[in-house]
Amino acid sequence: MTFAFTVSATLPATPREVYDAWLDGKKHGAMNGGGPATASKRVGGAFTAWDNYIAGKNLALTPGKRILQSWRTTQFTAADKDSEIEVTLAPVKGGTKITLKHSDVPDGHTGYKSGWVTHYFQPMKKYFSAAKKPPVKKAAKNNKQR
Image (cartoon, rainbow, N blue to C red):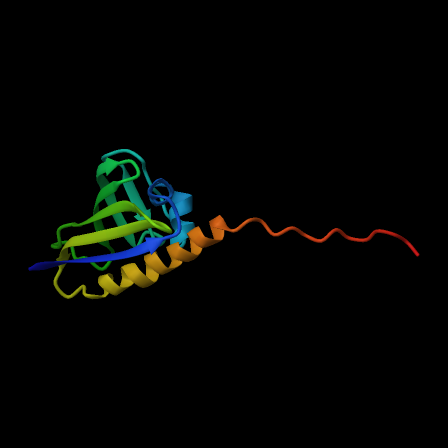
């Protein structure tokens, strides 16, 4: 048996910024703080996240709007089929509403729902908030000798 759930959040970034970061290995790892990640911007391309804990393939991509991926973790058994995540991005006041539907999750893997919030959405809010802040100017040093 499997189950599905949906989680969402508002991020301080445009849909295209979120889409591009999700499909860029370096940015993906940075935005969730989960260590090394790999990614592809093509349908059929493979990805990994959280230092190879998560792996899958891009099933459908609509730039700036939708990402559909097969998804599994190292906790899945060989008998478990891949689950699927569908990430939809919609512009809202203050940024982007990200909605993630995770389906075909193997029974007993109930921690993924809260994991998306604590290990993705919360760090993503910080990542995109920091990206929006103007750089801090350093005070000029007084080099006069007395």
